[in-house]
Image 1 (cartoon, rainbow, N blue to C red):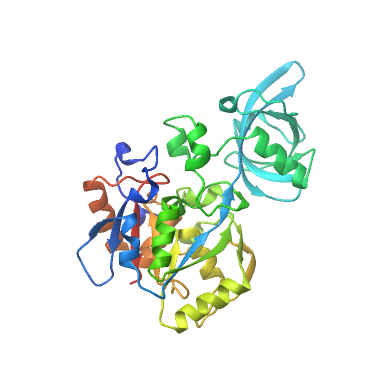
Image 2: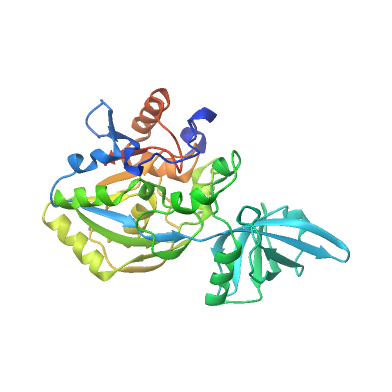
Length: 359
């Protein structure tokens, strides 16, 4: 399909720079397949829109301090380098987006220190070599430490990797340390937040459980490539970045029992949906899964595991807007986004949500 089909105009002022407070006070647009009317609600209304026996599936990944700041030394000359980690390659190597990448060559050394907004810390610097250099600013850093020691150094020296459409308008600060993690964040490894999960509060979870809605967790370590606009002209020419995912045996069994009893599986976020669809068999049942997924969902895809989707409003020409168009219909989602813009909904990671029921 032509990527231009998934374009739309979004005014700059619609991009949210801070989340709603409390989190579940964010607005939520309800989109049903057989009802042309769009329903303006709040995320806190979710218990009234689901039914006893339904199952919510959230992503419990935790965002790491994936933005690193350092210097490359070449003789007496130094150059400031900013790197955003996007994919772990091995125990000691990370693929990253580096700026300015033209200042780096294979074999050169970079010393990373504390992020400016985090101040001076009594932590040793982190050294790395450039082991590979690709296109569009991609490099692979081979760090001098590995495994848990590298994880600790990244957490100590790095900063929260806010998306570029937020970071381009303001600096990250202490509030983002909490705001950009979900209530469910447990397993460290993501370089971007599963943003639909940002809307949940303990009170909302308690209200859902009181209404007979169960909650289950999967893990998908979100990579930066998930949110980027597609540069190809046709979807068939776009290559997704792979991300590490996990669906436990217990969760797979519980979700299959939910479906068998007539309940619905409601994915909280496109990351949870992609993890479940990767784990789904042809008959719609879900199996345990552990591994990488590069599933790319566009209109024409036959959904097998998920009946409803809670998600934020996404970038034009992005793989995520393609996914919601596949789930609820392209024309339907273009109309929903036009309504959201006119009605003043807030877009992207810190923005409002929509609840989509599968067409």
